[in-house]
Image 1 (tube, rainbow, N blue to C red):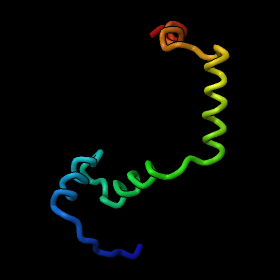
Image 2: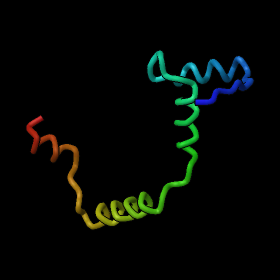
Image 3: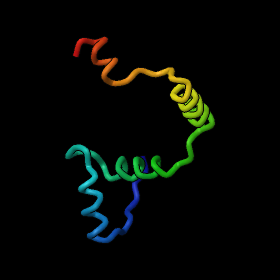
Length: 73
């Protein structure tokens, strides 16, 4: 992988450090996660969301309590 250097403020560096989920997580991974959060949803994802909304409106869902009872949790 080719590497490059970027300049960021100390404040931004501290913000990136706070976002690390584990000590060895790279800043590249953190930045990629942030970029993914801003990307548009795919057509398939949007279709899945619409179907889920329809299922909920039609009452085709289980509550957490129902699932816990079924799994005896």
